[in-house]
Image (cartoon, rainbow, N blue to C red; front, side):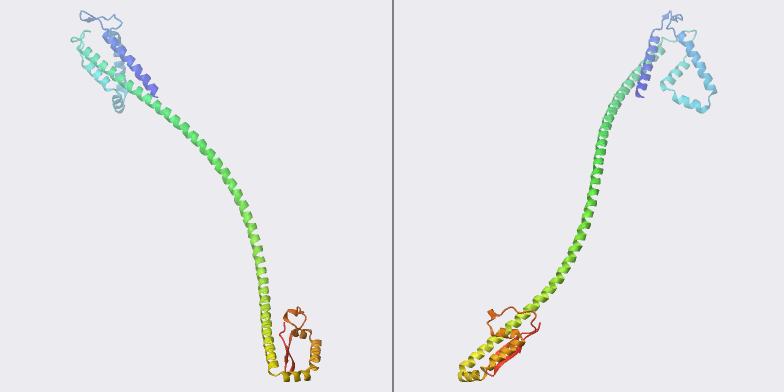
Amino acid sequence: MMGDASDMLAAALEQMDGIIAGSKALEYSNGILDCQSPTSPFMGGLRALHLVEDLHGLLQVMEADEKEGLRCQVPETTAQTLIDWLHTQMTNGHIPGNGDMYQERLARLENDKESLVLQVSVLTDQVDAQGEKIRDLEFCLEEHREKLNATEEMLQQELMSRTSLETQKIDLMAEVSNLKLKLTTVEKDRLDYEDRFRDTEGLMQEINELRFRVGEMDNERLQYEKKLKSTKVSDPQRETGSAQIHGTAAPENIKAASLHDPSFMIEFLHPSQIPPRNPGWGSTVTCHLSPSGLKKTPGSHR
C-alpha cells in the first residue's frame, strides 16, 4: 500500500512538471499568443472547456449532500486555482497585464511541486521505517517460533516425565500395600510373642518364688543345724543318751520315710550333692533332727 502511494505521488510530480514546462513554453508574438504552437494554451483550453462543461452537467444532476461531499474532497490549491481563473477576464485572446497572473501561478505550482517532493521524501522515509519495522517483526516472529518449538519440546518431555512418575507412583502404591500386609503379619507375630513372653514371665516369676522358698528353707536348715550344734556343746551327755535311745529308730524312720517319698533323703545331703528334682514328685519333705527325734516337715506343692 505504501508503494502505491509512492507511485501516485511520482505520477503527480511528473504531471506537475509537464504543466510547468508547458506554461513556460508559451510563445508571445506582438502581445498575441500563437495558436498554431504545440504548447499553445488554446489547445489545452478546449480540453479545459470540455471538462468545465462536464463538471457543470454533473453538478446539476447531483444532490446537495453529494455536492457538499465532493466539494470537501477538492484540494484547497485546486479550488483556489479555479476561483482565480473564474475571476480572470480575457478579451480577444489577449493575456491581461504583463503575465503577472501566470507568474504567480507558476510560483504556486513551484511551491506545490516542492511540497509534493517533501511529501514524497517523508513518505519514502516512512516506507523505509515501516520496512525496518516489518523486518524487526519478522525477526521477532522467528524468535517466537523458535521459543514455541522449544516450549512444545519441553511440554512433550514434561508429559513423558509425568507418565513415568505416574508409573512409579503405581509401583510404589503396590509396594506400600505389600509392606502393609507384611506389617500386619509382623504385628500379629509380635502379639503372639508378647503372649508367649507373658507366659514366660509367669514361669520365671514362679521359678523365682521357688528359689526364694528354697533359700528360706536353706536358712531354716542352717538355723536348725546351729541350734543342733549349740545343743551338742551345752549338753553332750544328754545328746549321747538320746542318740542311744533313738539310734536304732532313726535309720528305720528314715528308711520308712524314703519308701513313701524319694525326696525325703535329699535333705540329708549337702546342697551341692542334691540331684535335680523329678517333676513327677508331688512334694518336698524336710527332715529336722532334734533331741526329741526325727521330725518330717512337708514342703510346697507345684
